[in-house]
Image 1 (cartoon, helix red, strand yellow):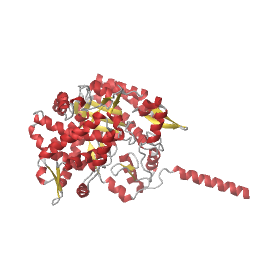
Image 2 (tube, helix red, strand yellow):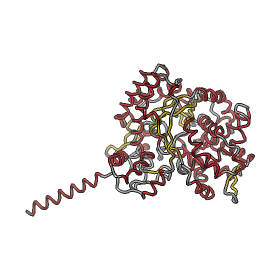
Image 3 (cartoon, one colour):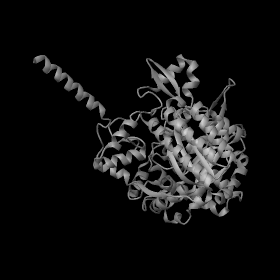
Image 4 (cartoon, one colour):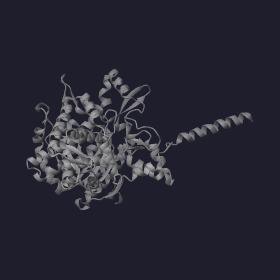
Amino acid sequence: MYKISVISLILLLMLTMMNCGKSAIQSKADMNYVKQQLVKFEPVYISYDQTLLDEHETKALHAIVEAAKYMDEIFLHQVYHQNGDIRDELMKSDDPMDAPYKDLFTIMFSPFNRLDGDKPFINEMLKPEGANFYPVDMTKEEFENWITLNPEDKYDFEQTFTVIRREGKSLKAVPYSEEYKKWLEPAAKLLREAADHTRNESLANFLKSRAAAFMTNDYYQSDMDWMDLDAALEVVIGPYEVYEDGMFNYKAAFEAFVTIVDPIESKKLQEVGKHLDELEESLPIKDAYKNFERGSASPIKVVQEVFSAGDTKSGVQTLAFNLPNDERVREAKGCKKVMLKNIAEAKFEKIYMPIAGIVLDESMLNMISFDHWFTHILMHEVTHGLGPGVLRLTDGSETTVAKTLKETYSAIEECKADIGGLYTFAYLCKKGIFPVSLEKGIYPTYLGGIFRSVRFGAESAHGNANMIAFNYITEKGGFIYDESTQRYRVDDLKIRYAVSDLLRLLLTIQAEGDYEAAKKLVSDYAYMPQQMKNVISKLGEIPVDILPKFAVLEE
């Protein structure tokens, strides 16, 4: 009798421990906090002009959207190693008290609030610096020491399309094609189906080569094919941006943009692509640092977003993108700038204008417009393709700006694009390529946009970029705070000098691969001053971003 009782007790304890271990959710943030985060997102119905597609392209579109959904799943698993378990538990719950947590998790693709410095709202674990690209317990030092001791692993470990995993006491690089095979295989099948539907040869070529890349882990040819894509459908699908890798900015996250080209608007902006060498020549740096080796092809397209997925859909919605990121492709063919006009219009109406009415001096308000804001976004993307990319070292070897600047790269590059966007925008106005009347409103419109952007979180790469620019320009007298009105205005002369000086500094850091200078710039300027905090505190009733509801999912 005694023996049976002991065995029963042991079994009961084991079952209890097993049941406790099954729950992926150990704790939750205060419900009010979660609800306060949800109201920061304004639901917006994202429709598109279906008349721009024929029946063949419509079938291709729907197959591509289905493939894009797999990018959501891959990205979810890239962000955090427990994401799958947490998501499954939330989705199975029929407790109405779990609904807000479920909604915020869906927006953030994780239990971490991207608008609040990745603060956890489910459980209390901090987000791993390297997301789920590396073992959760791996440090930078362990990674770097491994490469020092195993130099033959350096390429694979730093490669954009591998994850690092433990194998016993060792580290190993695992290709994305292996790590995410169960999602990439069906996505590839759908892309091949879409290629069969379309009547556009360039789109079919890209879809087939991207499907092949999912299996081979070699994205070079499909990036080259994407640069040649000229179709009614503009499609991005695969691993691109490295922001999620906060440890090294080495590893690319999966994303998708499924869009339709706006032919009228795109034609207006193609003129910019004819002046890339001239813009490179105009940069305020030594001639030796200027880069005329990148490909001259730089198509610029304005599109209507139909669907997005993965990295680009998490948290804040992307306004525009500049791809591919492979420097080999950029040097061979340049890069493509794609502007998401329907997303930009929604943000400008719902968010930007209400913010500008509070933060800008009244004398500035009549200078701002959607044209100013949208054109600066364009020039931001153009500037990503200007300046240093591949660096040639003294020993004859090559590296990239991204690798030399490590974790600072994203902030420095985004700041370069923002400030370079102002510089090149003004340059094209002076040259008469853009209407001269636009020039005066460039800087007030940008200033209002900073306040929109930093509400996403000043700690992100884009947030750091905004704070570097804001504090540097303020220090130089370009932005002026009025204590009596608690509003900001622009000094039209001083800001021009500040923009030129900061752009010179950023480009020089990149050209020289100066990691220490990059760290110092981020350390000195990437902070939010109290005055800005005070002004932002008055924006509480204004949504921080839009929450897209895609019409295509209802078809």
